[in-house]
Image (cartoon, rainbow, N blue to C red; front, side, top):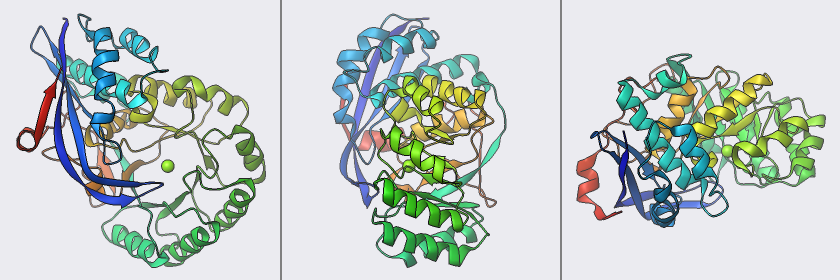
Length: 365
Ligand SMILES: [Mg+2]
């Protein structure tokens, strides 16, 4: 089997406007990457998100990565990914991810199996957590958490605004309202210096928060080592740690984080993300997978989550209308707060081609 073409179908998406560490949404171009083969099997992935449109990556994919895959056997994913990663100095991880995910989609379709079966299925459901947007008032977080609890969800994560006092007020208000009826996490999104990170960490430790995510800058290994020595609450860093798969060694060897983190988009595909999770497992560490920014990346993350023992939760970023776009039916959370393993071949979710056709801008090749 040989790869005969790689195209990107760009279409327009008016994404809902919201804020996390930065504002996202508005008029965006998003892309469907299609890898074609001489045997008629096609693999797909989505490029771009409400945060960064596909137009920011399309030239990299077509000019830098497409020449590396043309004529190759699409099932040689390990070899192809190594060649794609060799371009990481000039190509974004999200661009490499888009090619890698489409190759895994082909592999699953060729086998007639969902991707998690090829990775080695470990389970068929996992609890989701609702992961908030940044909002102004503590009461907005309280209302949101109560709403998810009423729908059966088991866990809620706060993305606050980066002011330590306000952030703690939000954490206290949510804890007061929710008590022990949901698992609660805080993701401070790299907002603090060491001193504030320690103050906030000690306070949410007292409130029995489940994990403390990204309080310090993503490359501050020195600060994380100090912080981890002073806190008992588990620290979850490395979501955007530099270096992809190969950047985790220092974090582990220096005991700079309790758990590893990443997702297919920011770590360059299913191939490295699976290896990262296995690396964590060897050290008896959790690897909590981050959301993927777009619907098919989330699906790719879901396949990995079903194939590893060391990820407790599946992240569903809110509002989900800013993350879920382009599928006929997106990942659903059941009435007990679980997401379930995909059952169809490949990625196993149907692309909404009518929607894409109606909003089509161009097919790039
Ligand atoms: Mg995060």
